[in-house]
Amino acid sequence: AAEAANAQLLDESKVASDYEVAKAQVVGLEKIIEEKNAAIEETGRELDRLKVNMDVLLSRIADQQDALQEVSDENRELVQELARKNKELADANEQLLQAPVEQ
Image (cartoon, rainbow, N blue to C red; front, side, top):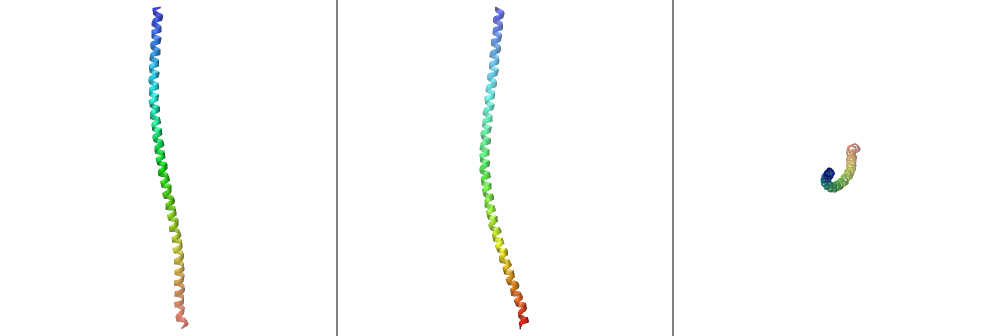
């Protein structure tokens, strides 16, 4: 009977020890989960900040593309105007060259 009681005490002690180990593991896992959740939340906030920054940059790119298009259009108009002026100068020069011949 003493042996049986002793064995039962050992079993109860092992169960209690196993319980404490499992409890410590659960607490450890809960701590890890809390840390991972905090990291996920921080990553989510960082992603939101990056999305805002990306939107700002895309907006700036669009503005720059618009400005570039305007400058390109102005440049095209100036090239056309320059071509007209060059033609006018060439025509005037031709008239000057022909004028002495007509006299």
